[in-house]
Amino acid sequence: MKAIRIMSLLALVLILCTAFCPLTSAHRVYVREQVKEMQIKAWYGGGYPMAYADVTIYANSTSGEELYLKGKTDKEGMYYFTPKLGVSGYRVVVEATGHRAEKEFDLAGGSQETAELPLYMRILAGFGYLIGLAGIGMIFSARKLKKEYGNK
Amino acid sequence: MHISYGVLSFPVVAVGWCVTLALLAITLRWGTKDRGIAEEIPKVSVMTGAFFVASLVHIPVPPTSVHLILNGLLGVVLGVLAYPALFIGLTLQSLLFSFGGIDALGVNTMNMGVPALIAYGVFRTGCRRGAPMALLGAICGGLAIFASAILMAICLITTGKEFVDVAKVAVASHIPIMIIEAVITGSVVAFLAKVEPEMLPVDKEDERR
Image (cartoon, rainbow over all chains, first blue to last red; front, side, top):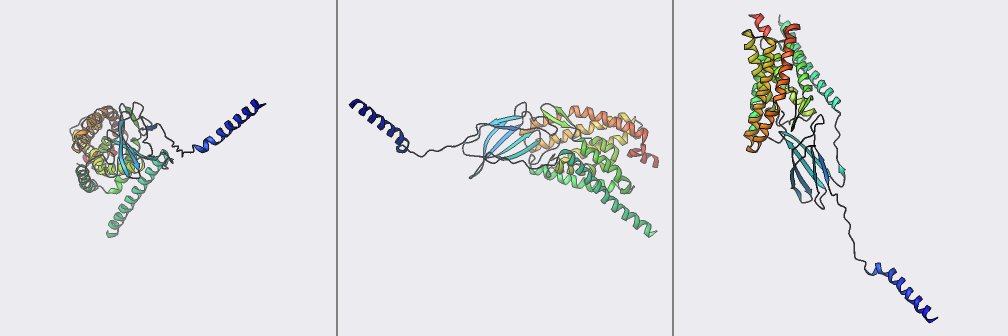
């Protein structure tokens, strides 16, 4: 009988211990997420990858922008880098033989894709401008002709 | 072939703009001197359109990518008016396709426009001497690209010594374009000489004499 009482007492103590344990050692705990690798892809218009292009990465923190990494893309135009802990804003500059592209992004907010017109729309826009310019030129020459004939 | 925004040093950009503005004024005046601009506008517009779209034809030349330029063709067909045409085309390309940059527009127009003028000069003198037109066109097409590549290399090298390798690669990668454009310009000129000889600036001047 005595043994059972001792046993149940011990069990009670144990349960209490486990129950109070987290409370007693309640240090404040921090968690930080970390993106381990960023992929940068660079390609020319037409889809051909920018191979072996120079990549420069600037880290945008609250203290301003600073040079973070320099490197080269691989054969597929890819470049990988590990982001700096605690810095989410980056600016990437890719440069090759006079071609240059720049992109700014935020790991927290995702990539901010600037809305761009599709290619065929841009071609049409270009032709539109050309026709407009031709029209303006025509107006001027028409005015000139009118003057000439008016004088005659 | 386009030099992008922020690559070149300030003096090179400034020289490019000065040359371009001066040549724009001269070519516009010269090109519309004896024939009214009304006659030229449709032709210039069509060729500018061709130039504007040709840059989308990409040819992968590892490790870079090059595209058609057609400045030789513009020079041969438009004469001195190729310069303003290239300026308009390049402006549209930089605004709509983000090829090159607005600040580099002066340099880019110079790099492509001056060879176009050279091509025109070669074509005209060649025609006067009675050389076959198609062959001359092909030579001019190739020559214009070659001159453009050399000019671009000079611009890059004067900006900084670190661009020497880049410039070499850029010139080498334009060799295929040179051949392709020689073929295109040659065949276009041959076609025009047969079908629409008035399109070529040379014939008109010869007829007048």
